[in-house]
Image 1 (cartoon, rainbow over the protein chains, first blue to last red):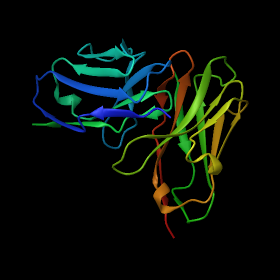
Image 2: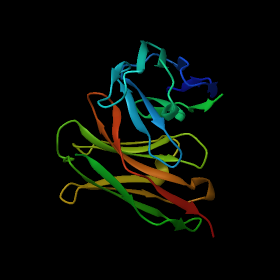
Image 3: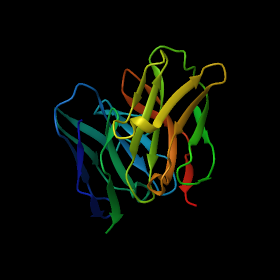
Image 4: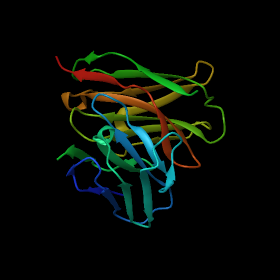
Length: 103
Length: 120
C-alpha cells in the first residue's frame, strides 16, 4: 500500500506569510493527488485536485504542484481564515495532516 | 447541487454491529464514473478511508478493516449503507460519506459527518 507522509506536522505562521506543505508518497502512483482543508468540527473541504487544479470557489492564494512522489500545497499569503488542518489524499490514502497555527 | 448526509446511531455497545446510511441528492449512483466512499476520523486524529462503492457496484475496502465492513447501495433510494461488525471503543470516530468521481479520484463533496461513540 502507498503511504503518504506530510511535513511538517505542525506549522506556526503569521498572517501574510507564504506557507508550503509537502506530501511525499512511498512510491510513484498513477492516480491523482488532492488537498483538503479541515476546520474543527467540520468536514474536509476540497482545495486542489489533480495535483494542481484549483477547485471552484477556492481563493487563488492556494496552489498545488508536484509529480511522481513529491507534492506541495502553497498558500501565497496566509489569511486568518486559513488557520486549519490540511490533508493530502491519493485515491484511498490520506496523509496524517498538517496543522497551520497562528504564530 | 450535491449534498450527502450520514445517519445512524450515536452510541453503540462493544461487539455490536454499526449500520450507517448515507442519503444523497444531486447525483445518481447509476451514472458512469460516480462513487460514494466512507471515511472516518477518530477524535483529534487523521482521516482514514474505509470503503468505496461505484456506479457499477464495484466495491473496495480498507485492507485492515475488510473483514468487518460491508458497503451496499440502493440506487432507487439514493442511499449507500455501511455496516461494520464487532465494534470496539477504538472505532469511536466521526464517520463521513463523500462523493467521488473516477476521473479525478477526489472526494469532492462530503457529508457533515456523524459521531459514533463505542462504549458500554
